Length: 248
Image 1 (cartoon, rainbow, N blue to C red):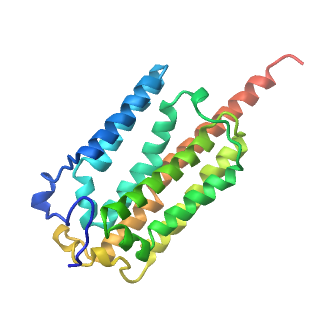
Image 2: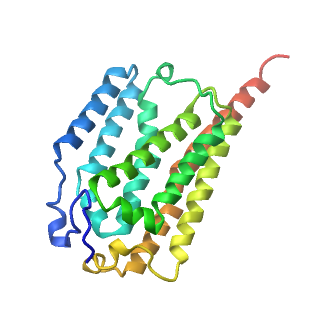
Image 3: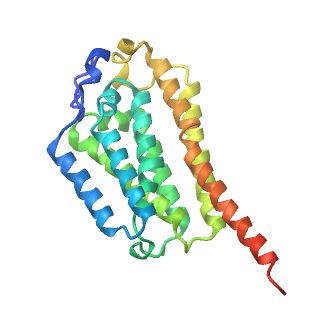
């Protein structure tokens, strides 16, 4: 097994997993600070619910045994990242009052390109292995993924962005994640050296684990973007329907 300084510790066995909670004080303090900021900022019931959702997702990602399981399984790492970029990021944006968010001044494509590049880079074998080499590298991966996802979802959910631009961002992100998921799913050999010896205890070969990760990125990860696109599209049609009934 490779000698890696993975943040959540070495790969656990199935018997050790449910006791592998992460109570790292800086992480707990960071989660508490973010939640406190969101709750103080919230002005509506929907924003408070989004803040509580953000808290639960942060605890799932960084405190629950999912953090340790991601040391053993690449599929768990992908599930962890899916939680961060498709669920936590929009929940945080929805928890913040719109007036506190800056009006988008940069082209919408820039947030999409930045997030896409980071998703592909951190799920490539070399950078991924680097990220597991030290806690600092791990947090570089996590924070850049979260920050780029926040930027993307802020563009998507901004009232100043047109429906067409928002839907294009959502569908573009769905397509690029699906392409990455397909590459992982149909690869003929395992690509991630960090998980060559850690998957067997969970009944998976390294290749099967990688294929499962690809399927997670290909299908479940696409659902939040597709739901958001459908909701935005519905709002457009509702607006048109309302306008069509207005007297001329």
